[in-house]
Length: 276
Ligand SMILES: NC(=O)c1ccc[n+]([C@@H]2O[C@H](COP(=O)([O-])OP(=O)(O)OC[C@H]3O[C@@H](n4cnc5c(N)ncnc54)[C@H](OP(=O)(O)O)[C@@H]3O)[C@@H](O)[C@H]2O)c1
Image 1 (spheres, rainbow, N blue to C red):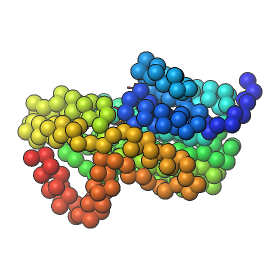
Image 2: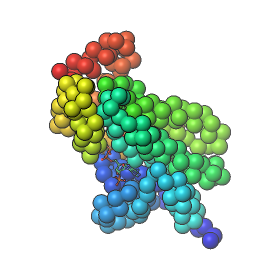
Image 3: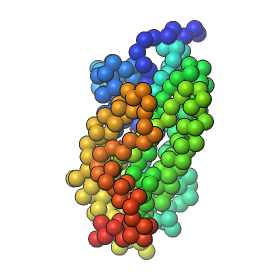
Image 4: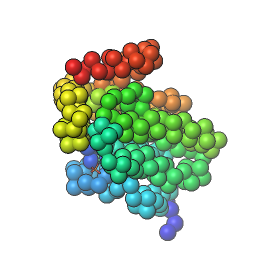
């Protein structure tokens, strides 16, 4: 089928059934972007259609599903301008307690899902000689917590992956940015807490794990709102020369500054104190 180029910038956002992805879809639609909102729970995105947003069912771990969606968008509009790789979850539990099958799935969603969609959009962005890939990492891509080894490993991976990609695709006019949210009130926290409780709540690691669960509960009261992250993504999309990284909300800037300042063991001490 011949593609018909359309005027508005076309954006694909993953993980748009909740939290930051949903807020980003709504904000970008209100600014005149042509938005595709993708997630597995398509029923949770029904109301987005009322804002002119296209909602699509997508499991980011299904490479064929990712490729088919990107070709559908390009066939419909003739271009794809922005990919926001936002889908993700926190698989929490002590290293000894988390089965490697779960650790692999955490990488499938948070890293290989992001990489698969990136690979799907790149041929089109290279041909257009323009495009922006926004990878939602975390302050967890720079700092560490006990019981978060697999989640943090994925976000450290997203940071390194994005830095490599940025240099690789600059020659084709394609840009890459990383978003580093702090603690944001979304479904993420409850999922991480439940996984931590189920995995290590009664194991040899239970004492510290239960303190960690209470720290996550507190974060759900004092965290930032997801619209802060949506606005950071919008700033990156609008910028002629975007920054490489955008810390966003939930004390992200301060925590990343502390991480730079403190030696490893002092930062460990701060982290463990926060769990007391
Ligand atoms: N909340 C925080 O404190 C925080 C802080 C830093 C970074 N982050 C990161 O920010 C991103 C967005 O998280 P959020 O806080 O907005 O969490 P959220 O409310 O739980 O939303 C996560 C989204 O990811 C989607 N998702 C999960 N697995 C998927 C899969 N296999 N295929 C497709 N979509 C999938 C979910 O949709 P379906 O289940 O419907 O598919 C959902 O829409 C994540 O990458 C997260 O790691 C969160």
